[in-house]
Length: 316
Length: 316
Image 1 (cartoon, rainbow over the protein chains, first blue to last red):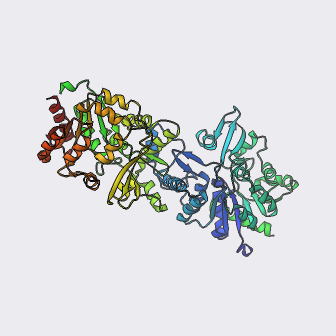
Image 2 (spheres, each protein chain N blue to C red):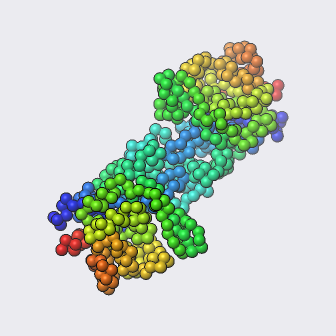
């Protein structure tokens, strides 16, 4: 892997799947050579707090403080604030642990003092000893809104957590994306990176918000040959979350090839799992190189193997 | 005490001292005959949360959940959110327990949904089984600002908690009081009450903000003969807090008589402690009836005795 020394790697990230990939990636390359560009379309303002679920999942995971049972939130959590909120009859379906609340208090305070989300994110990541450069997709608010087949607009977390994504979706929009700017240095990171990975996150609600911001898709298209997307669909469904169902509801096939089609203008290479190897031809016909390997990241060793294999394939 | 049955009692309240008085009062009269009008000049917005220290102290005390060691906050608290905030280097001098945070999350959420502070306060009090009608002085923001002798403006909690009131004050103002309205029903409560008590709270920073709101002082003046103020100064100083020092810094004498002078246009009766009985003549010369009794509320029984004695004296 010596050819990776000194190279810069950018990763487009959602939450859990991206965090697992990053956990493997930092075993293969130096953390400070990696920039994670993280979706903030899922962010929410709740109880006055500014909450960034994907950013926190990435930072907590890289800081080895993620709750291993849930894949979100912190280890060794307390739930006293939530218990109190439940007693009051407040909104308690979005579970905020007491330690986790400390993060949201800090972020909200810093934002109210005029810090940008980029700055606060850097401060939080530094305190957890995260070497990866974690940056939000934008410092401007962009909110993923899903419209149900009954015409109701739902904030993403209403859909994802409150309704446990058990409702049929007709369309998705990214409110505010028209006027949002990419976070500072985001475009130059993409233009100057040696390799750009698209994490196996949900293409429609984790990666699409990032791509919706003016300039990001263009920058990726310029770098298309160095962009490697990893399929989040394995054997026709997502390992976690509603990606498979959402693809179907929005008129796509729930397959690795369908995801490849979504990414074909920004990615030159597409990584699929061994179980989907029969889709290789379809993917190549879309104009993408196709890497076939074990993409199931059961642990960080397997995530590191996925990264290593991918880099070897593109080098080779 | 039969003559108190069916009578309505209004109490103007700051935090700890007022809460102790109320705890005694509800042993003497039915809680639902009492309305507590509470100072919100000390409220603060911190980490995005809307915090009402005096309202919470009153409610937690009446709900028997106050932390007996501190006189503020809740019993059986956890400090995980605060520990996390400290780790981040955030603002942690205003201590918010994990359970207490639940209250602030609920309040902030309800306010963001369009509820008034009166409504949220009623909801919170109801959940703690508080029979007293607790109402904020206003649903509009009024903020107590102290100006130091060096000309620096400080938010009240900056002065009171962060600097532990260890700084010399030149003046006090109540930002927003010109445009703030009394909370709904506040004026009619004063006009229709049989007895109005002014709790032994700090006259300059707990009661003065209430009186600064248009209409409240006028209403009290109309009811002057039924208004009974209790001195928070005993033997030349406050039992707790900086009232004595503040009186001196702002050109008053730190004495019960000086407090009586501050209240003389709104109160017809002034209650002082036995140790201050030599001030009786001066107080009477201000045109106030003077009641002398033990005003040190070491526990709720003593607070009840203070209320009982006061009512007996005025009943004659």
